Length: 118
Image (cartoon, rainbow, N blue to C red):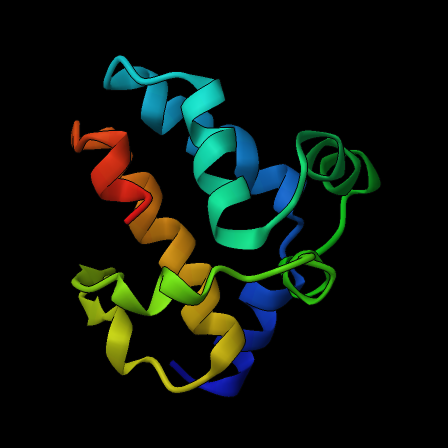
């Protein structure tokens, strides 16, 4: 991905994408609570902190910059998202965004929570 594409993704509001994550999960009989649990596992946000990020309509860049504690086990997330292997993404912010995308995909595909949360 080029810098222009990266910058566009980084500037996207997390609050705009969050409902899409929930819809994707709910279409596959998963819950908003499971989406929230997955996001909290990755970022270290509390439920209240996650709600604040959504209310403030922060960009993905700010959302990840303010994350209390990115989970060190996130490096165990492997596979492809949008045709790209997540473990090969060089830009740290883009890699974190794609980690989140991959976790939501795994949730929507019916993977057990204990496997998703590694």
